[in-house]
Amino acid sequence: MPEDVATMAGANGGTLRRGGPGRARKSLRRIQREAQHDLTRALDLARTMMRDEELKPRDRLDAMEFIRRCSGIDKEKPKPHKRSTFVVLRAASPEAIAATTPAPESGLR
Image (cartoon, rainbow, N blue to C red; front, side):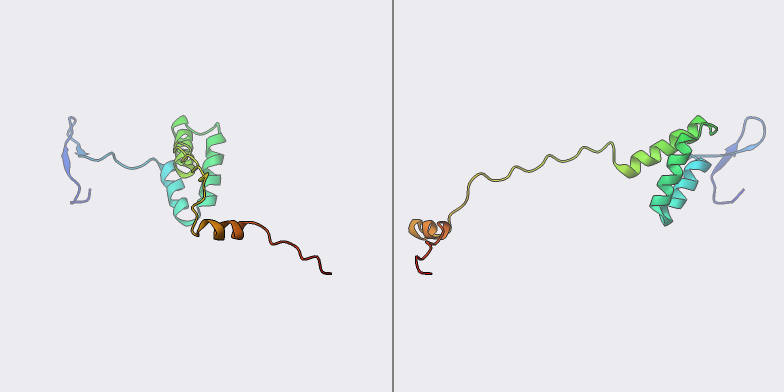
């Protein structure tokens, strides 16, 4: 065992690693490694794993969790901003009226 790993004596005379959650499951590691290079392909792989009934339920759940994290399904979408219902005038009243009314057509043709 590597020397930098904290260990303790096991009940049956063996050695146990201490601390940390341990390694990620093989299926989850494979999807995450693929996502570093090609996210689209990793999502396709996770979708395939999710639907594969021959896999262990834990592996299928890992695939579902990966899809949920990548897609942001659990995130709440922001409310759309309401548009302003009034306009701020930047000119005096006569100038503003002149700017907003269409110019009269001349009768000459």
